Image (cartoon, rainbow, N blue to C red; front, side):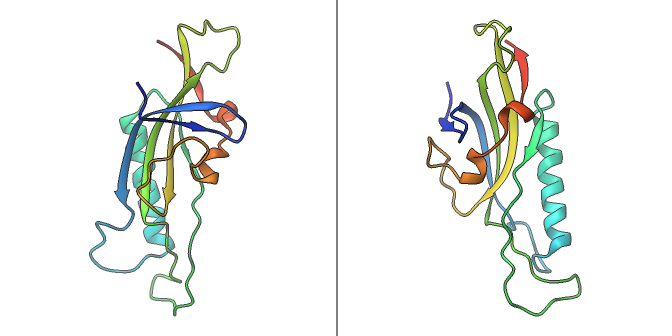
Length: 143
């Protein structure tokens, strides 16, 4: 049973099987959001997603950055990711039409950022999440 269903802009329906939400900068004790910090944050999320879901491809939805008009610090300009980091495990029908639809599904683990802790659902999910190229990124697997 899925947590929710997300409808891509292509019309394909995805079942969200697992979702992990974390504060983007929750563990940051000092410093400020900048490219270096953001790159480490994204790298950590992707590594964790690959480790947690080794049989599924992992995809990062490129995040929107806020670049406030503030003086640059020693690590460069301030760049702020959205406050909620998300890792979701999605499932859908098989990609290959020759696969038995009863025995095969497709999967993709997605990392994205969003402004709230709202669980994506239906056509109300973030547009960047709904625009995923499922056919180009997901893989089929046998149940």
